[in-house]
Amino acid sequence: MKKSIFLAAMLVLIVGTSACKKNKCAECHYEQGATQVDIGEYCGDDLKNIEASGYIVDSILYEVHCGEH
Image (tube, rainbow, N blue to C red; front, side):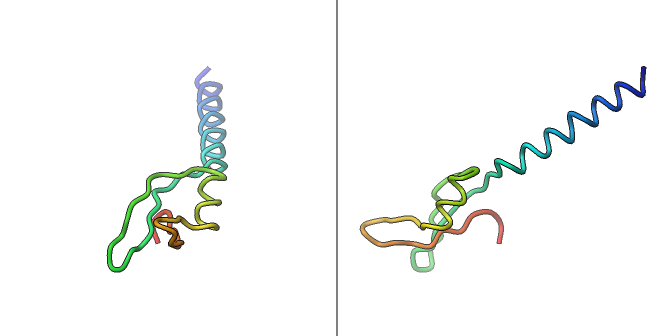
């Protein structure tokens, strides 16, 4: 009984961990001069897109950085 509970818990942990990797989330920001401007958290495809395309403010395109670098 203990062995099957342990195996079930491990399975839930593995599935949960792999699901998180697919929909990774990170806090994002851009730099305006010497100031770092936070733009919030992005996940999954939105995260990839914002990093690839940048962020536009007042017709100026800024490079976006997400997560800890």
